[in-house]
Picture 1 (cartoon, rainbow, N blue to C red):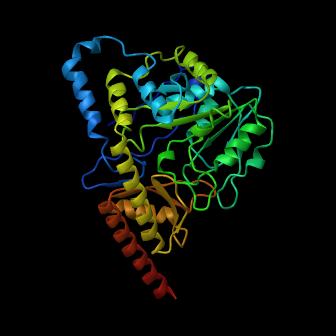
Picture 2 (picture 1 turned 180 degrees about the horizontal axis):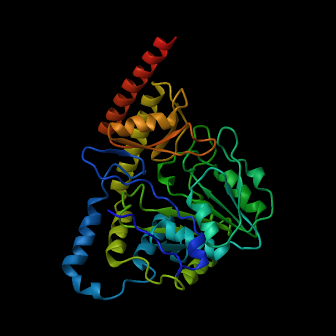
Length: 380
């Protein structure tokens, strides 16, 4: 097949200069052990499928009509879940669209946005797309965030919490401190993985989500997604929580860009997911338990594993040869994520999978490291 030649002569200068985000690999092979994109190992609530089927069976004719532009039923369900008013909830087509609208609504070209140097790799893409300067603040040697390092002029701060890809959690006290010290800037807390976070032992805090701070701090905006803890990555549903003024700004921007972001089926399915609290709690806890067992299995192989509050672990082989380990696993049909970037290129990000997937992974790593040890001993 001839290689496609791209003619850019009709492109805008903006399109020519973009450096798009590269999504996690989605290979399609038989007997694949896919642990690279942080998808939930469990299916969504059965009530999701029932709700979608009901729309198709009883209201199929309504598909010719536009959906509710503000996803009113879903907003009401989320507001009740978090004890908020509906005007404190925003819905978008996946959290990535919500984040794009955040960059367009709150961050200024005149002042930079601050963000950790190790974090969600879409942030620099958004900054470049919207012509905003992004100043990346170095994480500490242990990959933690020092709030004092953010004491500089800015138009906003955006932090993934728990962090991706490290999995570490920033305390609510530190988030509150950032909001207080930057009272005229929007503090965006990207909580894609927050449902897998737990209160640290010995902590005085009883909550982990910054949603608990939005009535106290009017400049905190929290984004979340249905892709991880609710197993709905294929449905594309994201949301934001904040004071009504921030939500109104997002709504104005949405309605200037994509006024009907969520289709009827997505709205019905997402609402059913929110209402099925029992299933959510059950599968959330199963993922947490599996995360702990995966961590123990890796540590038994002398891996350094950072304390994770997500549905993945960030682990360093004893030899630091993460790229070689990832390549060796791939040959056996096991896909994990390796970031060839400074400071983290000796680590692997491994999605929490099923118990069977973990057994396959640990067995492969056990053989791999045993072979390496044999080779090293022979060399000596």
